Length: 404
Image (cartoon, rainbow, N blue to C red; front, side, top):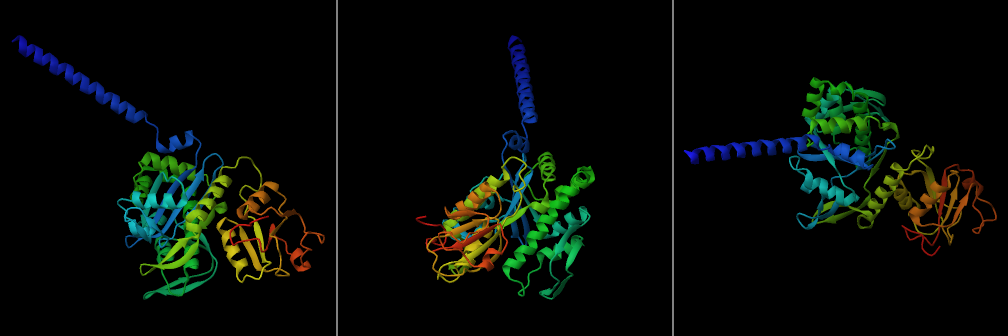
């Protein structure tokens, strides 16, 4: 009898311990901060991967980088045919080779390695769900620069130029069609415009999307590991982005045939895109109200050497860093020994950043003078008004100025 009472007491004490432990675990779980709150508390850039999926493959993959303290954002477009050494299969292949919407972490890890950042959040939107999402947002408004008339297989495609508001069906058609009449850069630009318009509309509808019924539909459109609470907090932050000022940059590289397929191999073994990301992060996190923080600066590139095509290749390099190269061509002569930058933007910090991209130390403020060490340039070039004029000299190796 005494043993039975002891066993009952022991069982009762064990039950109390289990209940207390469960209570502690529950309390810890409830008090644990959300990943978005953690990011905000340590004042860091929030990175999120968005994938628009078609036929179980990424049609477009975008990394949205957002810095809460300045409300600034940037987007990196990751082409699916970007070639790199895939860690899991230990060979060079397309980055989307490892894509699996049900296990997106491996794909996200490869993009992290490519860009040199940590990606804390991700969401996949299938083409079926894209139309449903756009209809939930009451349409997406975007500017279509030129009239589109083509075919996707047997499906006729027609979009008028100008400002348009697309419903779900039209949005899915605009994003998803593939035509042999359209080159890859034009197709990428089309989808980038849509993605920015989508982010803008998500921000505009943010409060309405907190309605329980709308919130459930929104969550059903996103394949994500985020909790609803995390998604709401994250979208509260993204709603503060001025989408019209978001710069979209794309991984650049050279096409090479590898194992029977054409791959886009990133410039300089992937080091260039990492450098572009680092500079972009510097712009996003720059404090203050300076009017150059979100401005896109214009550049004129002039080839002062006899190397054919150098201005065009350098222009592509600078576009990767977010500059608007409005003109490229030949300088007034092709025997410049030194590379020169003429700065007309009026911001020393910006000029130094621009010069640092190619490690050029020959920077002259305002208008070039006739008594410069290089003997001046033609009046035609002097009168061309851009923030920077870059004259490439023989000391430029295609990436950096050597031996300033």
